[in-house]
Image (cartoon, rainbow, N blue to C red; front, top):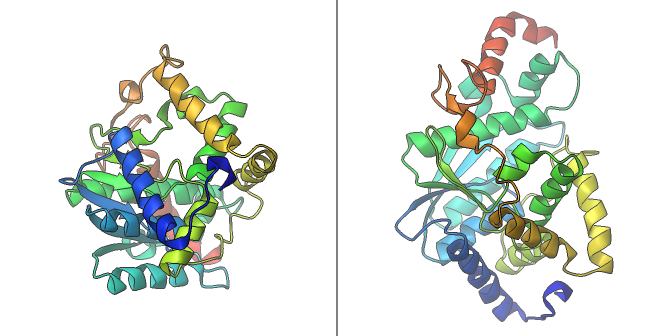
Length: 302
């Protein structure tokens, strides 16, 4: 690991990753051993590894799998669901499962087609739906915190994109922990300082079976492009991604965005589901579902 000027054998590497994760959990005050944690798992290496790490560290962690109905000829969702179930069964863990089509009438690709009138990728609708469901399950089932498997590469790519456009509201909300607010569960990213390659190595060395394929709709996305740009920088300057992210966190602490409105200042409960939203009346997700209901007779023609 050139970025850390460190080399470890298998035994010590499998000790080092949980130790680092525990250090980050404590440093950023993410949660404690008395908290009930819900881990959002996708069947991928990061989320399954996070669940594995938290259990090894002695935390009370259940999983949440959201069935998106994205198959695109390769069975993406069905395979990711199988692997999430397999991990839970192999380790005698509890997995909450939400099937989007069963819950809301249509899978993500169809919801996106309705929302975009048949144009564009479903990524925005997918993200909106996952955020809504994760928060709802965490809130309704009494979990103290929702943990996601975002690694350093994910965080650096998002930060890079938001910095290019100086999207201050998004920059304000980015960090290892997003505190709870009325209708919103606390969110934590325990892997935020671990590289994607480090998490891949952890999953392989732990024998965690995970889905290798990216979402079929991710091809050509800006996030992947940003990752590729940052990888080129990292290759020439090991540790550049970590420095970029950590200096951003330090800048936030020193009041870089002191004059910006806090998220809670412009949020209010959705009139339908009760989750916090900045939109008047219904939140974006409830407006989407209302639109789907109105256009249900046309779905068969999409």
